[in-house]
Structure formats: structure tokens, C-alpha cells
Length: 115
Image (cartoon, rainbow, N blue to C red; front, side, top):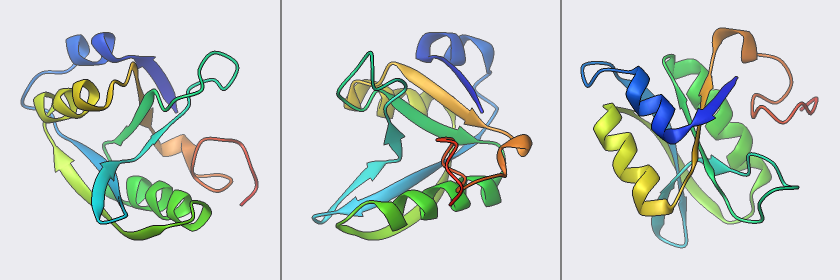
């Protein structure tokens, strides 16, 4: 998993590229799959997960849904960088975590746990 500041992420990729983003439905509302980049630096969600591979994003989304109480449903959507930027701005996120092919171990959430 590669974590970069959101502005760096958007400068690196053209509008023609697409990424998968996971969403969780909680209390009737859909939110993008977000996490804390570093719990020592922040107490609010500040990072969104993206992936070029559907299976990896689906696995991470499912892993989080299994751990978070109140998740009613999940889905994965293919989005352009401008759409991801809208989510980053709307939810006040500062980082983008790109899940790669080497991130298949553990639970898939990037936290390092075993499952």
C-alpha cells in the first residue's frame, strides 16, 4: 500500500485513469471507505483507499465491513480522479492510500493484522 498526500495523488494521475473505491452503507447513508493514516497524528478519518484492481478493493471493503458494527451493505465503484477528489473534499480527507498487488496478506485492510 502506498500512502500519499491527496494533492500529490491528483497531480500524478490523468483524468483518463480510473480507480476502484469501496463504499459502506451505515445508518442509511453511503460513505467511502476511509481510515486513519496515523492514530498518533489524527483522531478523525483522514485517508481514502483506492485500487486499480477490483478484487483488492472488494477484499479490503469486506474486511472493514466485517470489523465495523452497523455496516448494512457495501459496494465498489470505478471512479475517475475528479470524482475521487470530490470525495476527498467532501469528507475532509488529506491522504490517498493506493492498494497494490503486494497488499494481499493479512486482512487486506493495510493495518498489518492477521485477519
